[in-house]
Structure formats: C-alpha cells, structure tokens
Length: 154
Image 1: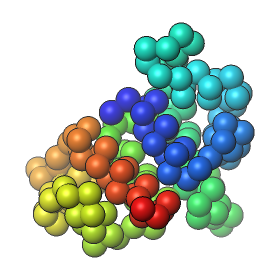
Image 2: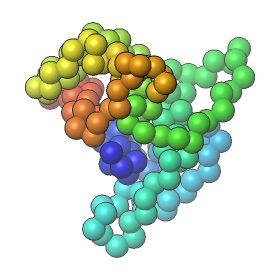
Image 3: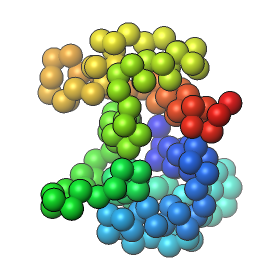
Image 4: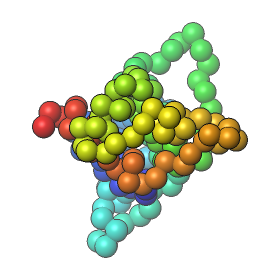
C-alpha cells in the first residue's frame, strides 16, 4: 500500500489536521511543513501530488506511537528504521493503539475479513522466520477500515 494512502487513512481515522501531522512528525525529529503534508495528501491524479518517502512514513508511525502512548523518558530514543512495508505499518499501529491479537481478529471480523490466529501471528514475525508472511494491501486496507470504524464509531 502506498504511504500516501496509509497517511490519508490514519489522518481520517484520528481526525488529524495538517498541523497535527507536522507535529507528530516533529516528535521524532523529522522536519516537514504543511506544504509537504498537503502534497502527500493530494490524490495521485491531481496536480501537486508527491509520493510520501518511506523515511517520512517511518517517522510518522514512530511519532504516532509517542503521540498516543507518550515518550518513555527512562529509555534513550530508538533510531527510526527508514524501511517501511505493510508489516511495519501493521506492527506500529498495533503498538500505537495497544492492540492485542484478539483485538486484531475482532477488527478484521467486523469488516468481514476472516483471518486465523496463525495468519495474524505470521504477519508479526521477523522476516527471516520460517512462518513469516508478507502483509498484503487488502489485509492492511481492511485493518485500517476496521480500526477507523472502531475509533470513529460507525
């Protein structure tokens, strides 16, 4: 899934303005302007569209965790890994919203997407693990849709 689509979904889910997105990015030291955010939120077929870089999405997801859960002052800040894929997005959202396996199963069930515990666990494994499974765009879209419905209330 494109970073721009993910950002649009999370922004709608949490009812965030452009300034809030800039503030969340700043929580991890990433400097972005409202103009940057505006171009990332522009649709692909509209003029002014810019693809959101992976490093910006990585900072946004880490900033979202800090925004939702607070910063642990007893630990030094973790370096931001600039590699982002659907599995990373899913993991970071799980941490930010403090979701358990049962929560994810319920969210997926609410949107009519069936997944087993084994399938969910495979998405959160390390890539070198024999049971690791890549998270597909359809799974992530349905997860974002279900999480949005849960947070915004149908």
